[in-house]
Length: 167
Length: 237
Ligand SMILES: [Zn+2]
Image 1: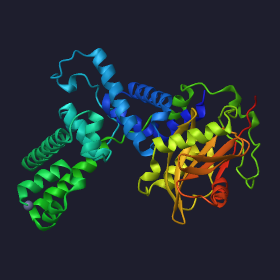
Image 2: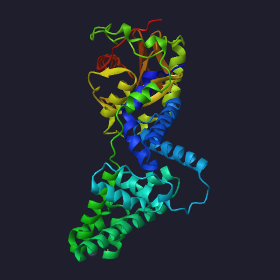
Image 3: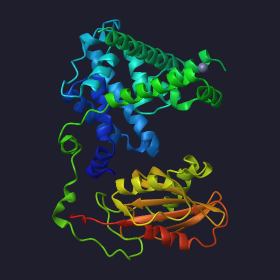
Image 4: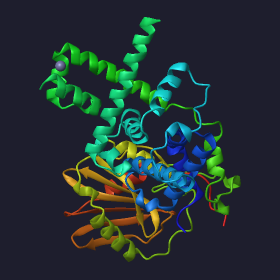
């Protein structure tokens, strides 16, 4: 045995908060998010030798949170994808400021994959290529997703602006 | 470059615009407005991620994590060694010193260097931060970043986590390993064109090897030993 609880604590200190934010955004549930982070860090700890590159570790962890979330989600959901996402995502906690709520509500009206690609780009700063690896798709497909997502959000901004002017 | 192409690029990857697009956006008022709208939008999207992790998250995760070996008892705290000791000696959280013979360490150090050829990569500006991060994760403290450090990362040698770094001095490139929990006889390395030394203190070993004639690696060894401090609790049994 060559690993210790010490390594695990260091993993938690380095990555838990960042991973929690991502996990929470994926599942919208504080308990499930914590569970996802726990599973992911334990998995990382077990495959310690795969995490040689410090910089690659975060992308690896993000990918693992995402896979674990999908795995759980698939366990509970029929495989048809065209369900409106709002039906199965619990509501976002309401104690946040209104502006953040508004953008979250709008984000949640986007198709899942478009929204996730945009969050990984705008929120985490990953490149199209890195997002493609995380989401298991092509950079061109990621480009289309973020393009669509931004276009739609800007359109909603423009519409709500018009409504405010009319009111 | 026309406005249509510029909008496409702005909507697709606003933080990494090709220079032709960036120039257009600077010069075209309408595209400039769209660019600032998109930047604002991206900031709001990033904000949406900013939920506060629940109180006690990290503590709960650590408690529910893998069980700590029982010899990590805190009762032995405070028995830190004097900082001046060459290759200061005590490591937290590592099993008993390995009994693998020196010759095996030479073999595994050279094999790992050939397998994970970090020395062939260009210098990474994040090397000092990586060095710090890895040493701390291995249970040590960084006293100084070694001069000439160009890369640093994790590796596993003989099943143990170690620091794998590249240091350039006086035109020579050295591959360096800092291996906590390893104790070995002083070993001369001369294998497949790699030459160097492995030395160890009480509970940490340092290997330095190079491709070219490495006449005098002692100063490098010494500065490495001085750059990292291992402190904490003594293994209780
Ligand atoms: Zn234009």
